[in-house]
Image (cartoon, rainbow over all chains, first blue to last red; front, side, top):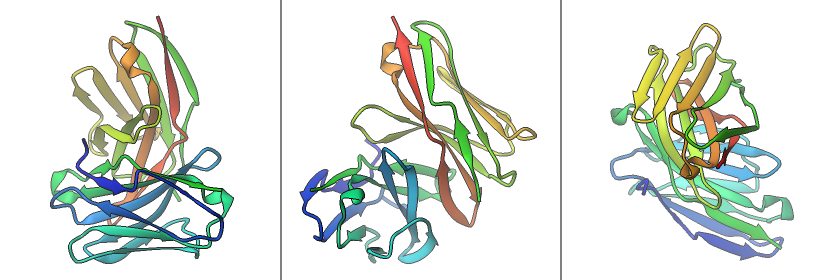
Length: 113
Length: 112
């Protein structure tokens, strides 16, 4: 158990809909990352937050947004969903105090039908 | 930006050593990581190495870093069937911008 908790584990939704994925980082970790894993694109970095502020942005679509709340949990919002958004979405957290180790959650499987 | 490359497949006999290789492009990479992903599961952090080290050993795992050639390897001693998985190499190129860039992953198959 990495200590990073993601919900829901599985989600099936229709095209055009909107979903929210939730992540609770490891206790004490201030950084939260979101990654997308798909068969054709591999592991793609989406966005990073540090203590509530956006730190880095990757290949995140405009239809996607994220935020990190004061209690450090984070949410990834995916809207106007398309079939191609079907993927495994990972959240990870890190602490510089722990040698910059980055731990991943189990992921949220999103299927868009 | 950073680019990380790995071979896609590796087959090893049970009991032998497995060596998974990775190359990266950004010479300023600070931390390099190895993750393991079993079917239907998340990414498990196996080990990591800081760029000022050239070797790190942790039980059956040995990581070698050749910073000059920007080459990283993961050696798994006495490979077991439970080691079957996809192994990802990842690098952080900028300490202030902690974006992990992943390789494509190497699928390790154990031959009985």
